[in-house]
Amino acid sequence: MSSLHLSYVLYALFFLLLAVSVVAHRSLFNSLKLYDTPTWEALGRPELKIGFASAREQWRFNWYILSLNYRRSGIRNIKRAGDISFGCIIGLCLIGVGLITFGR
Picture 1 (cartoon, one colour):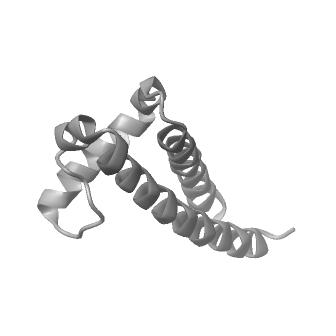
Picture 2 (cartoon, helix red, strand yellow):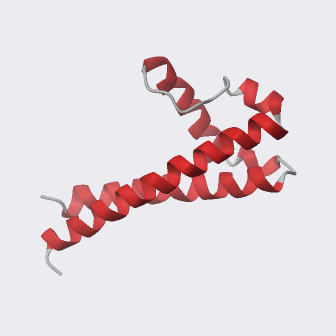
Picture 3 (cartoon, helix red, strand yellow):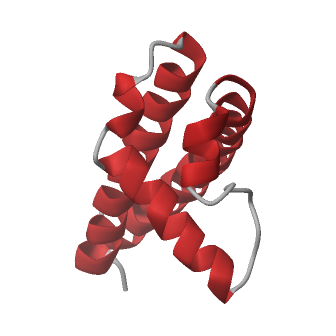
């Protein structure tokens, strides 16, 4: 497979995984808000927003996922959405490396 075709596949996978990530993040936001309000408030009441202040909140929320703190919750919805979000973040990083390596 030529690198041009590989980059098309990687872009398609990137955007597909990005869409899954948005849905998983939204599910995790809602589950935290509904079942674990103190954690949701400690994370700065995360929502899907755009802007500089929300970028800091998003980093805080991503660190909550990457450090696997969501696994401490006894609530199945939070663990499942967190696992999917964690997988999406790792997958997006790996695809990004692949695009940098094999992209044009």
